[in-house]
Amino acid sequence: MKKTALVTGASAGIGLELAKEFAAAGYNLVLVARSKDKLDKLAQEIQETSEVKVLIVAKDLLAQNACQEIYDDLESQGIKISCLVNNAGFANYGSFAKADIKKELASIQLNVVALTELTWLFMQDMLEHNQSEILNVASTAAFFSGPYMAVYYATKNYVLAFSEALSVELKDTGITISTLCPGPTYSDFQATAKMENSKLVKGKKMMTSAEVARIGYQGLKAKRAIVIPGLMNKIQVLAPRFLPRRLMKVILANMQKDDSNL
Image 1 (cartoon, rainbow, N blue to C red):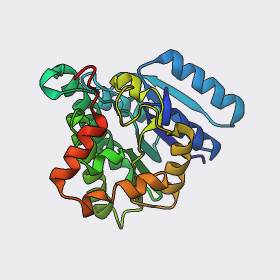
Image 2 (spheres, helix red, strand yellow):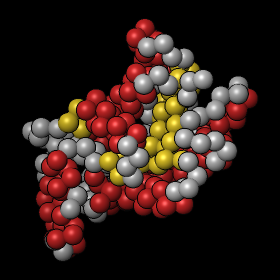
Image 3 (spheres, rainbow, N blue to C red):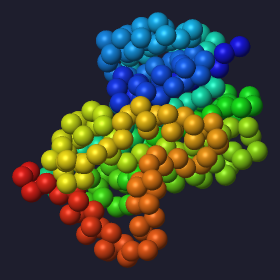
């Protein structure tokens, strides 16, 4: 019997490529995102190249009761999730004082609240079965405080700390939980966050979403608690061990600042 992976934020970027990785490994898929058209296109592509079933769920995780509705719908269809991939998330770029507070709160709702609720909901079933998996997508931002993306960095701090704690709690349950922490990646993320002119990404060579997804999948299968794609990213996240926090904040502020709109 094939396992089933649920991937949120599956319509683009890392989520889309993770869906392909699981399909290639023979998992049936439940793909969640807001855009039905994009999900339909991905489902068709996957089904043309892999012998797996693909169920699309066009739902906005910011909507009230969305997570519970997804769980209840799958439960009513008898679909059990073997691997939960919490990938959906977004960032807002700029000075917090000038931010649209509704957008900042929405990012917390998606990056933190929805991820937490989905994890709890599907974990209840996973505890009854062996060899279940959870892959939470954070960021190298999880290791820092990030001026001009203060809320985003804080949400990814949460994802990493939450996942690390659960990895201990779940040690003897048969559930593997990994946190994928990519650095800047070629995707729609930068455009959505309106940070294309940030020194952090402008003119920089970045890993592709496909590369990050492949490493994330392999790390999950290797049961690694934290998966950091790329040697430079691995080195950079060690910086807080050697540099004062005050200096790290200054360095990051300089890297991320875009004088044209701050």
